[in-house]
Length: 135
Image: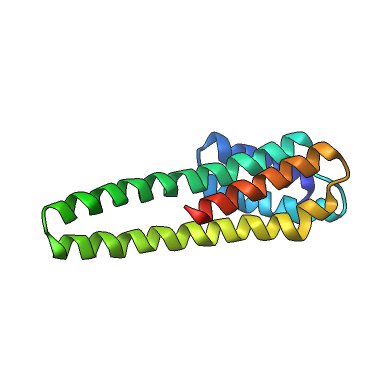
């Protein structure tokens, strides 16, 4: 598919609120950054795609953390273990998504940045995803 095709598919996925599909399209578009730097619109779409994917999991993690604390206060060890197991699944997904975006940034996007604005955008994005990993 062409660059325009990936971009259209990503915008279509965003309208349908299918952020995993949007990420897939933007990953392919990001790989083309070695040939031509991403436009402002393309950079923003990449950011939106990953932010929505990670945002949902971060919200899930916070909810599970709260449920775990609540069950601990009730001394319900069986439920605490269940919640911890489920939270570990969410943490693994978060780690994978953050690792994926950081790899895209390191491999294609930061090296292809030719303007200060693009460099700052990508470096800020890197910092955000490192912060998400640290949480």
